[in-house]
Length: 62
Image (cartoon, rainbow, N blue to C red):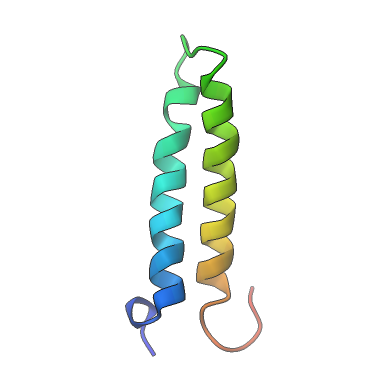
């Protein structure tokens, strides 16, 4: 079974992309305090996406 044929893996990859993009404004040197919330949300989406991709296939997740 391919990685793109699993709905769980596709959702996980999308969350990883969204999480990475959400973190970018908070990493800029002149970022406002509000952007630190985007860092937290982006990290959460990235973590959830990584977990979904890692557990999308059968067997033990690594």
